[in-house]
Amino acid sequence: MHIAIIGAGISGLLSALELVEQGCSISIFDQQQAAQAASWAGGGILSPMYPWRYPQAVNDLAKFAKPQYLAWNEKLKPITGIDFEIHETGMLIFDEDDFEIGLNYATQHNEPMQQCDYLNQEQLEQVNPHIAAKFKHALYFSQLANVRNPRLLQSLTQYLKQHPKVQFLEHCPIQQFQLQGDHAQAIQSADGQLHHADHIVLATGAWSQHWAAQLGLEIPVQPVQGQIVLFKTPAQWLPSMCMNKVMYLIPRQDGHVLCGSSMRHVGFDTTPNPQTQQDILTACFEMVPELAQFPIVKQWAGLRPGSPTGVPYIGKVPNLNNVWMNFGHFRNGLCMGTASAQLLRQLMLGQETIVDPAAYDPKQLQPTSICA
Ligand SMILES: Cc1cc2nc3c(=O)[nH]c(=O)nc-3n(C[C@H](O)[C@H](O)[C@H](O)COP(=O)(O)OP(=O)(O)OC[C@H]3O[C@@H](n4cnc5c(N)ncnc54)[C@H](O)[C@@H]3O)c2cc1C
Image 1: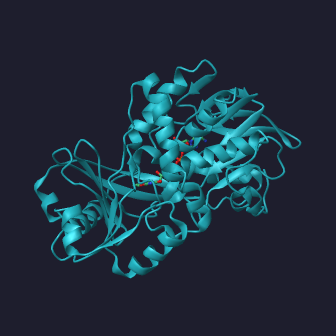
Image 2: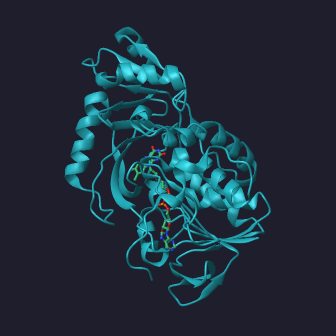
Image 3: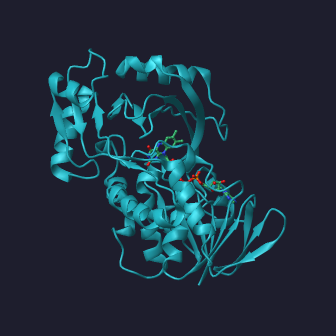
C-alpha cells in the first residue's frame, strides 16, 4: 500500500513511522523543510499542562507519551545516533487554586502526570533550591518528563530518510486532490505535478483549514502563536520543570532552559513580540529569580494547530474512502503524537485501536455550504 502524507511535523512523521513499520510505502510532503514548524517550536512537556482542564480524550492519548517515546528512542538511537533525551525532571506547579483538583485528578487517573504530591516549603527547597521564597508550597509531579523535540524530529527524519520505503518531498506544497467520486486518485503540488497514492493523510497542523473548501467541511483549526525564550545555564542547574499561571520553565539536560509560553491570534505570523517576551520573562523570573543572571541565547514563535477543545481530528474523512486526518492537536501535539499516529495507523489498517476512536472522528465536522 502506498500512502502520501502531507505535512512533516510530529503528526506526519510519526504517522509515517507507524505505517512504514507495517510494510507500507510512504511519500511525505512538506511545503517547507521538514520538521521546522510547530513541532520544532514546542516545549516538549509530555503531558497537558493542567490535565484536569482538558477533555479526557486529550489525556487518553497523552498518557502514552512517555513510555512510547522511551521505546522509540531505544529503537531509533542505535540507527540514527541521536538521543532525543526523555528528561524526567518532574514538574512543580504553584497555582494554589489547582492544588485540590490536581491531587484529586492524580488520585483518580494517575495519568498522564503520574505521581502527584503536595510539598511544604522545606520539601520544595529540597526538590528545587532556586524557587523564589514567596512560594511556600507546590504540587509536585515527580515522574513527569520532557522530550527534546528538535532532536526527536531530527531522529525521525533521519530514520525515515534512510528507509528504502520512504520518499521525502520537501519545499513541495500540496494544493489540492484529484477526486473521482468518493476516491482521491492523486494530490497536486504547486508546480502542477500529480502524485498518486492509495491513501492520503492530512497532517498539516495549523494550515489544515486549507482543505475545507475541497472537502466540503468546516475545519475549525486556527493558528495560535506561542513564543519561547531560551536561556543557557550550567548543566543540571535547574532540577525541575516549573509552572505558574500557565507559564513554564523546562530544563534540558545540558542546561538550556525554555521559558514560555504565550497564546496570540496573529494569523501565520511567527515573529517574536517584544511585549510577549517581557511577559514571559516576568512570569519566569517570578518563579526562579536567579535565572536573570544567565544569558538569553535564542527566542522564537511557532503556530499551534488550535482546535476548539484541543481534541485532534483523527480518522477517515467523511464521504471519501481514502483520505485521512491527523491534525488539530493544539497545545499537546507532542505528548499526543505517538498515540495519535498509532490510532491513525490502526484505523487505516483495520486493526484493534489503542483508544475508542469516537472522540476524534472527523465525522463530527460540519459540512460547509459551498463545496469545491
Ligand atoms: C511555543 C509552543 C510550545 C508548545 N509546547 C508543547 C508541549 O510542551 N507539549 C506538547 O505536547 N505540545 C506542545 N506544543 C504543541 C505542539 O508543538 C503542536 O501541537 C504540534 O507540534 C503539532 O504538530 P503537527 O505535526 O500537527 O504540526 P506542525 O509541526 O506545524 O507540522 C505541520 C506541517 O505541515 C506542513 N504543511 C501544511 N500545509 C501543507 C501543504 N498544503 N502542503 C505541504 N505541507 C504542508 C507544514 O509546513 C508543517 O511542516 C507547543 C507549541 C508551541 C508553538
